[in-house]
Amino acid sequence: MLEPTLTPPIGFVARALEIGRARFLQEHSPSLLVIQTPVHVERDQLSTAAHAIAPLDAEVAVIDVCKRPGANAFPSMVTIGRAPTNDLCLAAPCISRFHAYVTRGARVACLVDAGSTTGTFYMGQRLLPNTRVPLHSGARIGFGGLVGIYLSSEDFYDLRVAVV
Image 1: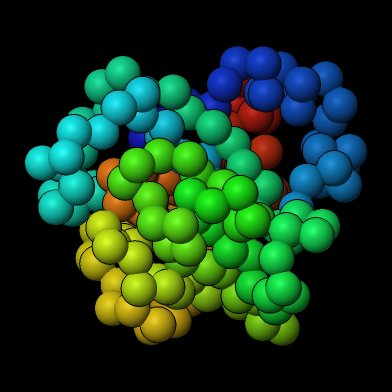
Image 2: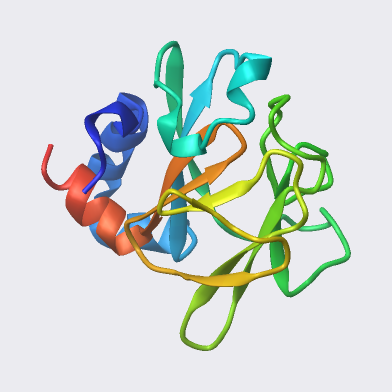
């Protein structure tokens, strides 16, 4: 279940309720990232584990974890980083230009740190660069100072939309 500090935007939830579960699942990728987007991140927080950063002055975004047409030359991975050529562009100073990526196999998606400066975190543990970690719905992940929850679209709808 999402933590109270990671409540999706009201407009996003209202739209999901309006269109219903079946259409919501058609319109979104199989997985979503519900992520805290701090207004600012202090330099001294960058060395702190992502799970320890307080959610002060934060908003929450819901992002489809999917390829963006024409974004980059890596067809087998969903890239995450600060550069505009990433599939998921997180324009925050605590994010490396090419920070991490998600790969999808036949049965499971994996999260990989791409050698980022401030780290990629899975369930509170910093990942070693280029090490694959299987993702499961509900996993708490972090990129530098940004904290998020990785969810299947089905779980997102059932846990966050249908309960409203």
